[in-house]
Amino acid sequence: MRARLPWMSLADRRRWRSARTVTDLGQCMADWLEGRIASWPGYQPNFGPDEETADLVPILAAVNHAGYLTTGSQPGLEGPGFDGSHWRQRAAVDGHISDPVLLRAIVNAADTAGLFIGMQDMIPDRTDSGLIVTTVDGEPYTWFGDRLSYRDLRTIWPTIHREAFHAVGTSVHLTLVSPEFGEDGQYLWKVLEEALAAVADLDTSEPACIVCGCTDANPCPGGCAWVAGVQSAALCTACRGQAPDDLTIHVL
Ligand SMILES: [Zn+2]
Ligand SMILES: [Zn+2]
Image 1 (cartoon, rainbow, N blue to C red):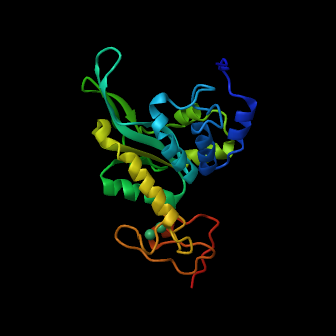
Image 2: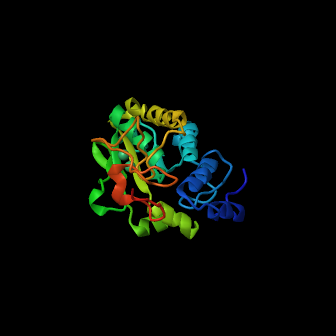
Image 3: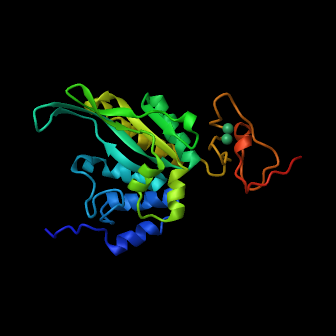
C-alpha cells in the first residue's frame, strides 16, 4: 500500500476551492465518498470514509449529489466495544442544505417517519440543541447537530473558497437521528431515499416558493398563497417578508 501523505494533494485542494455553493461542495463530498477525491478539508488528509459507513456510501453520495452536504453520519449499531463496554449507536446524519425544495422534501419525509430532526439557521432563537447519537454503558457519549460557531465551521472547512464558506455558514444545518438505537433505526437511510425520489418526481414546471420551497401540492403549514406580481420566481405569502433582495415585486 502506498503511504498516505499527511497533506491534501494540490489537485484535491483545487477541486474543493472551485466550489462556490453548498451544492457544489456536495458534489465534491460525493466524489470523496466514492473515492474520486482522496481528501476533504475537515478530515484527515488522504483518508476515505470510515469503514463503518462503507455500506452507506451509495445513499450518502446520492444525498450529497442532490445538495445535502453531509459532514457526519453513522449507522445504527449495538454491541460490545473493544474494552468490553456496551455501545449503542443511533443511525444519524448531519450536514448542510441551502436548496429549500430539497430541505422541505427531507424534513417532510423525516417527520412522517418519526425521525428526530435538528435544525439551525441564522436565527439563534430557532436553534435546536444537539441530539444524542451514541451511548456507552448507557451514558451519553456523542452528539450530532450541536450549534456550530464560526470557529467550528472554520475548523471543519479550513481551505474552501470564501463564497463557499459563506454559503455553508448561511445554510440550514440539518441533523436527522433515528429514535431507535441499533439496527432498528436503519430505516433512516430509506427515508432519505424516499425524499430524493420525491424531489426527482417533482414537476419542475410546477412553481415552488423561492424561500421555503412550498408548492400548490405541498403548501406551508397553515396554508399560503402566491404573492402576485413577482417576476421570474414564485414567492409564497408565508415568506413575503423574506424575499431575496434581488427579487422584483411589482405591486399591483
Ligand atoms: Zn414560502
Ligand atoms: Zn408557502
